[in-house]
Length: 362
Image (cartoon, rainbow, N blue to C red; front, side, top):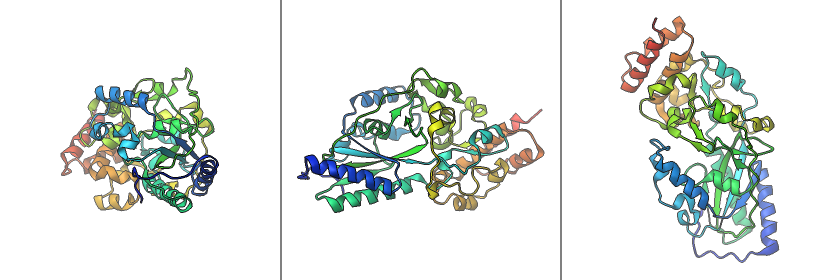
């Protein structure tokens, strides 16, 4: 992988750059991306919003959000020599998966965020973007670049917005007028002075569906999420005890939360992904809580190989399922499952199992 440097000064202008841009879009489609956009590096307003968000401690224990100084909003400081950012989006909605809303209504079912049902998206997009960069490098020299897929201090949604891929909705996800919001984003920081795209208009209007449906009311204001309340943060990013005040609201969500997207009117335009890597694995779209709770650590590691889920670790996996079992309809199977972990070696697991059993006490 090549890295952008300040010595690069590609002699490509005008028509050649326009032709190259059209070729990049075509290569992107061939590699499975639904859209490619190009932006400059102007992120001043987003930088201010980030500073205010951090000042309010909305990032919780995600300390990495406060690192790297100004590099997060200045791609040319992160990778010197960067002139443009090529943003790419790839649809992931799993059309073959069990109906998401039905799964949420079944308290015995384990709900896994739709993005995590298949292969880890980091691996999929990083590989495709690297291939795109290699095609560009074969066509023009010198080409210096760096690939990012939710893997560094990059304001990916702001850059994608500036590249015309959509607008940032009130739930802070990117929304595309023709495709909804069920897609991944990846970036290619490049030293090529490519022509930039035009941002699209925000079409959220007066709609507040995402804010109203959020289980923990984490969208504290339009375009502002308090991560400390967000179910995705609580079940994925947080490594300690889940605050008691949010446990009931988590319901049967054991990894992430999709409610703000599930009930967004724009997702009626979302299209099912044709990408085999995003097909549900291990029946995670239709698994029962007690079955997943019975996994040993070896089984967890085996069944989540190549999945984004593995990153939370076995202890948090059991913690999350224990909470969901506490919210499930009382049954002998549920009680027995909780008792099976009542004396688990982890203090974290025991605490959440104890809470769950209390929910079923008369």
